[in-house]
Amino acid sequence: MQECCKSGGCKCPHHRMVPFFIFLIGLVFLLQTMNVISAATTNILWPLFLILIGLQKMFGGVCKCCGGK
Image 1 (cartoon, rainbow, N blue to C red):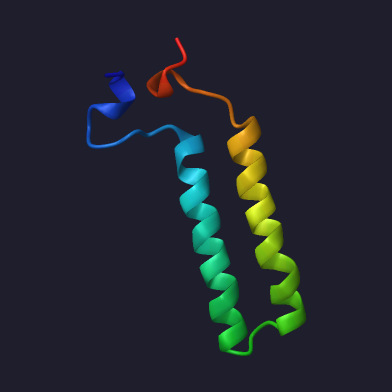
Image 2 (tube, rainbow, N blue to C red; image 1 turned 45 degrees about the vertical axis):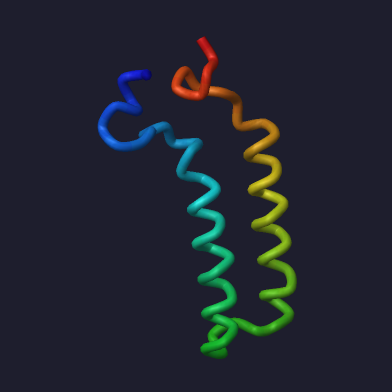
């Protein structure tokens, strides 16, 4: 096990990106429900965040804790 993973989870920044984008998607829907942003804006933002998640997973690379030596 790598040093970054010994203290209860990996601390590599790219492992935090997917939860961050999921948080953003939830925030977008919450703001729409509260009438802070329009439905049209929501219809643009949440697919955009899903695309960013996919791109991050495809091109994010592999760190040492994920098996890249």
